[in-house]
Amino acid sequence: MRASFSDRWATSSIPAGTLWLVAGILFLAAEAIAAAGFPDYSYAIDYISELGIPCGGGAGAGQICSPRAAVMNAGFIVSGILFVLGALAFTRAARTRGKAGAFLLLPLASIHAIGLVLVGLVHAGSREIAAGTYPLHVIGAGMAILGGNAAIVAASILTRRLGAPLAFGMIGAFLGGLGLLSLALLVASGHGGTAILPNGALERGSVYSIAIWEILAGLVLLADTGKMPDA
View 1 (cartoon, rainbow, N blue to C red):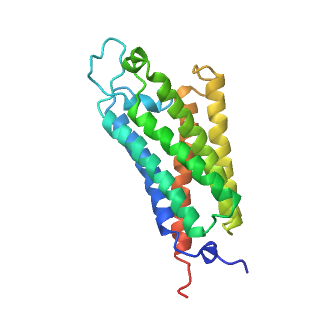
View 2 (tube, rainbow, N blue to C red; view 1 turned 30 degrees about the vertical axis):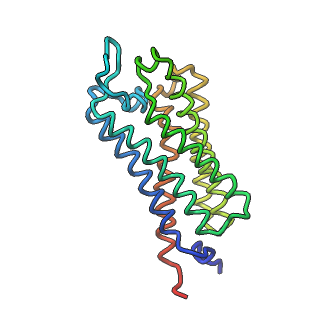
């Protein structure tokens, strides 16, 4: 009989599972709270970044104004930090410093975290465009999406090598691939959406893949830790 996932670990995976679970829930909750305060906001059409554009500061005609921008920006920053901390805890708990997957996971998770922090600090409104800082937001978004989706693919491969259920690894690889495909479609469409999906849906396909994986990974790790033998 194959040993449980937890039996392959030298220490408990509770920190990694908890950090990833909280990261995913926090991001989705921050988005929901910010969207609830944004008049006529559409999940299908509007970008997530629009929820982080603060009001005030000389906003004029055409300037997007998110009344709860602080909530969304905090969600970006904190979830990014939690993601990379989860990756660090995961590799340490599994004692995988000598495995190629660990060397890939940590840098990719760091890219994702740095990107989200940049997105949370540099916004995507007309003020930023006029000030010339908007490209930093675009770079941050690209880092967050590319790094995050690549990281969950690396994590899925690594967990499989450690004895995780095959289905978990396959789901992680699928979500990462779906996220990267959604980003490619968004870029190829020139931000005009496709005949099937509009901008907001395409962007969320590239972002929700990460959040869904975080929640799933957290639940799997915490559930399997409960099977860890006392000895």
